[in-house]
Amino acid sequence: MAVTTNGEVSFWFADMGGLPPARPPLPGDIAVDVCIVGAGFTGLWAAYYLKQARPDLSIAVVEKEFAGFGASGRNGGWCSGEFGWNRSRYLQSGTREGVIALERQLRATVAEILRICAAEGIDADQHETECLTYACTPAQVERLRASLAEDRAWGIGPDRIDWLDGAAAAARIRVPGALGALVTHGVARVQPAKLVRGLAAAVERRGVRIYEQTCVTEITPGLVQTDRGRVRAERVLRATEGFTRNIAGHDRDWLPLNSAIVVTEPLPPALWDEIGWAGSELLGDASHAYCYAQRTRAGRIAMGGRGVPYRFGSGLDRRGQTQPETIAKLVAILERMVPQARGLRLDHAWCGVLGVPRDWCATVGLDRATGIGWAGGYVGLGVSTSNLAGQTLADLVLDARTERTALPWVNRQPRRWEPEPLRWLGVQGMYRLYALADGREAARGGARTSRLAGLANWLTGR
Picture: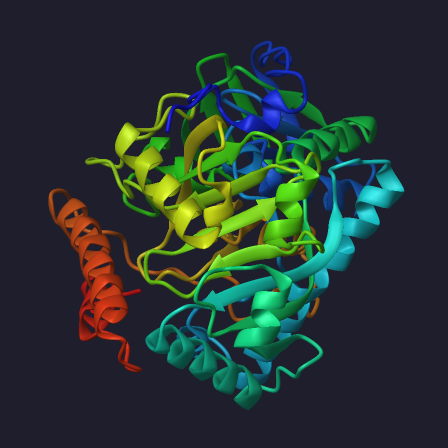
């Protein structure tokens, strides 16, 4: 299937009329109270909440490209408030009550983001809806029911997540062979580039200075070194997610895992009648290969997945351009989940990186001795998680003791990723095993998850 546009950062910017003009770069050496590296969701939310609490603070945000160039302007638009990580790992640095509190605050981010959009006049095509995660094999049913049972054991009730049987699931979206689905309430669809650009404008109105076209090369206590000059600040926040590998000394902190999306042409109303999807729900499935989709404001399907998951040496893409192999895999997923879309034109394909810590669990923190803070490692859940991270960073910078600063993800420091070629072999092996596991489960029709998937998880610590 041919693609009209490949790369150019993402479709979301094309949907807004094209890439935005860049703001001016850093004019030379400056001094501020807080310097934030990275003008994506994390950095901008931190700036927003800092200014809300302390309007007198001088804050500079330094960005290599433009606000939203990274994952914040390329993701699938899932504002889910989802936890999504291994709870037991957070128990290593906290209590059961702390993990429950973290989940509760993450769920609250959806309403918080929608509230701020309304207050700031941000039109991000936001739409409150539900997330449907489909099971199309007995093994997938087993995994989703096990996930639901774990949620119930942690006190997550049907007001948040529940089970639909096959008929009820198929009545929502006509996914072939649907045996059931988890339905998650209290989520939202967004157009991520509109959200990040609207947030950037909101922080600028409060006096935050955003310097684009400025490459940060090194972060040391009290100092951010760039190709345009130096920024001196008592507090420095690193909000670079999958691009952290570009900062000196941080090349193995978080692995830049590639994810990609294709967007179809707008579908005619008659075709939507065949598909269903009337509630613009977020759509995924329980396969190991993983996919995520939304029905856009203009009636397109945006379908995402991992494709080619990792480039050797933690390599990054060229402004979103993705490989034909990845596009072919995404088309196969689209046609498997929504076969009614077969033959539609693809208007855009792109990719980007998300940050993955060695233990696959997000973290936020501040080293008081150095004044350097950080947040990220969202593993694909950054639209909503970055909001809580921004709130928490603001608390930490202001030395405020709040419920947020006591959460078990604060100041966690997982070990670094292995050097090459070990991490390339590990990630490639993981996704190869996932693909084999999906194939075996579909072919055999058994109710048990393939052991190959367990081997993949063990291989990379997922």
